[in-house]
Image (cartoon, rainbow, N blue to C red; front, side):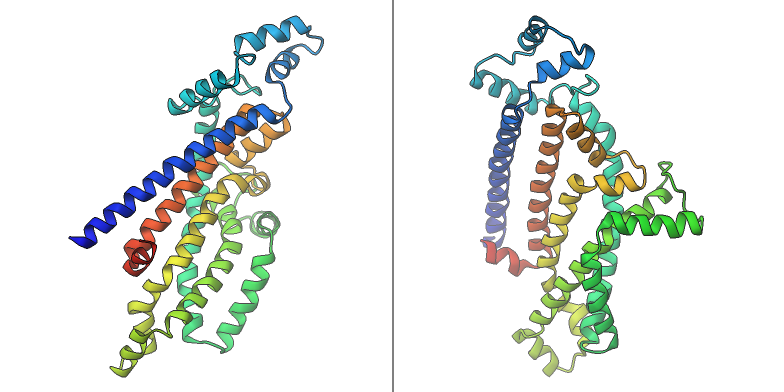
Amino acid sequence: MLKGTSSGISVWQELLRLVVVIFGVITLSFCLQLFTGTDPAEMIVRKQNVFATEEQIQAVREELKLDAPFHVRYLDYLGGVVQGDLGTAIMNRRPVAENIREVLPVTTILIVLAMLWVVLFSIMIAAASVLRKDKAFDNVTRIVCIIGICVPSFWLGLILLTVFAVRMPVFQVIADGSLKSFILPSVAMAFPITCISIRVLRASVLNELNSDYVTYARARGFTNGQIIYGEVLKNALPPAITLFAQYCAALFGTSALVESVFSIRGLGIYLMESCESMDVYGISGSILVCAVLFVLFNMAADLLSSAVCPAYGRKRI
């Protein structure tokens, strides 16, 4: 009963923290629109007519209520965000939310696939490295991980594209939207994160092996493999889950280079195009979505870590 109550409090604390952080992110997103030094009304008018007069710009400014007091504009923006309205993009004069809805699923598929590789290979290789600590497999893994951490994803993507799409035409050079076309970019995204996760998980497992319950299990005759796969790996997962969630969320905002290499039109490309066009509504909308996803992923990581390893949840309370 006590355990259930504590868990309930923890969830409510997480939700309260989530609301506060998202409110702060929305406020920062609004401030971004104000303090970039770009006049959206001028950008909109001059996009249609380079020789637009000041009167035409002022008319658009009044139409968009850009000359309203700060608190009026802030409350309008806050109300719009609550209703899913992120403004109208300067680039194509369509709702920003609609633009993001078009590209977000593509990036989501790409990142989900990348994270599947991360989970699959991180756990297998980290556990194998611990079982073969300081042997050939562990040493080779260490060297590959150090190199892999330093490799930029877009550069690895170019190598994969050259080898597996140009030299050996197993995959297509330009993505056609099929699941197969996401394999190479997801591998390029996953490789550096997998290398980091392997090192973090290996260190966490080794630290866990010094615990008293491991000594007790050894005294009862359990093998290292039984101990690691049976209990230690589960207790060592929270640091890797936190790292996994943070990288997963960060990829939504940093996927532009990999998407460019593989000609995939996702959220990263949309954010990059918005920056090139100085589309403040597109930029702030994309950043807001990425920030909210980052917060949600961190919250999910905390809850998942508490579920997988109850000791982690008790430490947080």
